Image (cartoon, rainbow, N blue to C red; front, side):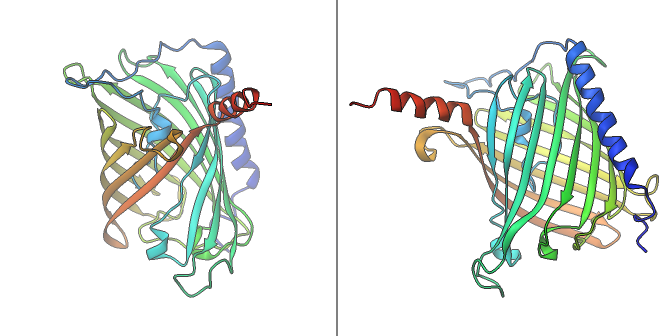
Length: 324
């Protein structure tokens, strides 16, 4: 029997309900400090609109949740194919979903990941396809409640595998991951913000079989991250250092250190297909040190983050002015 099977399922949902209830209570009763967007860099002729922290979070490039949330009533479509799977795996993973700003300081996310046999490996094209996981998340920006000039947010993410996907596209585990995160713009370099985050990943098995990757913790763990983001126009430089350990919460003793510098570029609207949506191109390298040895790699990702309300309004406007 797996060490996770002895943990009651009820406790996983208790953690999820408690964290979401806290978010709702704080959102309705607290008044966070006003949103502070990054100052424009010197010499910029036309500053790009501030990039929401949730848009900066791109799997494989930058994984920390930073405090600033999506704007109130903003509804965005997220599309993030893992093109690196064309080289490393037999199936292409395609996460997609929605992110919505409930208030100026509270956002929720709902995503799922589709998979497709891309035909460059053993399975023929389209011979296997379906959904492999579901992700639900919530984040609440509390403003400067802990320290002056430090933005603070709390959040929670829930991941669960679904269906009967190939083992290479899932770890087969359910994850409930509450966290608290902080960020601060340097006074002398306002385009640079430092951050750090504390979190817990409560892991349990599911009925879906999966595959643990090299140096994955594979158990409930405490997570610590820190680093900086440098916003210069539409280019964002990131450095993320992380440490995870199962010694306090897990049934084994695994420690993993990671270091990941990266770049995220916002494609100018005039170059984006159709001239709409937020197109992001990210590139990064990583170094991971853990019980399975040292691992080094690089990744490049494309993410589309589109404003659905803007698209709908444009479509309605086009229909109303259509000549009869």
